[in-house]
Image (tube, rainbow, N blue to C red; front, side):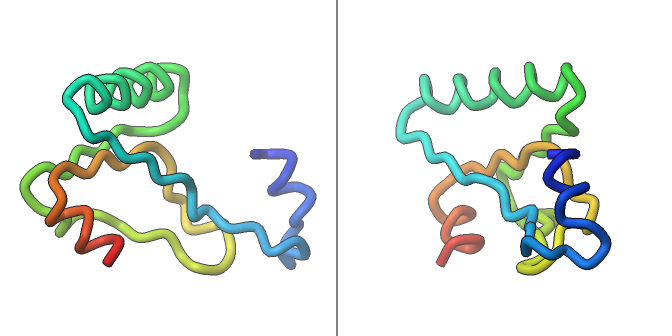
Amino acid sequence: VALLEELAGDENEINLTRRGYCFFAASDEGRQAFEKFADTASSFGAGDVRHHRDTVAEYQRSSSAGFRDGITGFDLVYGSENIQQIFP
């Protein structure tokens, strides 16, 4: 990631964003696997793990342009209603 940011430069010549990835689990086993992955990656410095179980009020969307908004880590969103609020 650091190499891509350096390549983008201050003018963001390659239109780099921090939109990230979205993974979905349809079972408790899948949920547990994602939680373990996020916790493990976080322990190696990949950022904090944020759990959004009852509400997505604290969920922070990434900017649709640029990559300097400072969001790092993992947002674990639980429940179809919460997911639909983020991804209508």
